[in-house]
Amino acid sequence: MPMSEDLCGSPTSLPSDLIGDWNRVILGILSHAASTGPDLNRVLAAAPDFALGQAIRGVSCLLLGRAEMVAVARDAYAAAVTGAPATMREIAFVHALGDWLNGRPRVPSRGSRWSCP
Image (tube, rainbow, N blue to C red; front, side):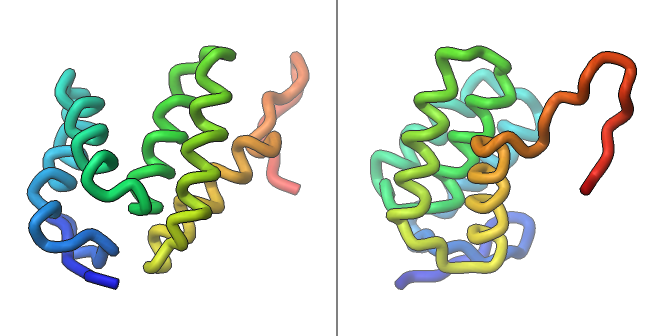
C-alpha cells in the first residue's frame, strides 16, 4: 500500500500524486472553504478505498445534523471499513465514525450534563 505524508506530517495511505488534493481538503476543513466537498470528492473518486477520506466524509455528513445525511454517513463508514484503514490515525477516524453512528456521543436528556461512561 502506498504511503505518503500530508501537510501535518502524518502518514496516509494515499499515493503521493494525490497528497496535494488531500492537503486541500485539510486546509478547506480548517478554513470552512466551499471547495472542501468537491476537493474531497476528487480524492475519493481517485482513491475510493482511502479510509480516512471516507471517514471524513461520514463525519462531515453527521456534523450537518440532518437526518437525511445519516444514510450517506453509513455508506461512507462501510466504504471506510472496506478500504482497510492503514494507519493508526485512519483507524481512529473510522472507529470514531462508527461510534457516532452507533449512538456515541449521545445527546443528553434535558437538564443533564455530558458524561463519559
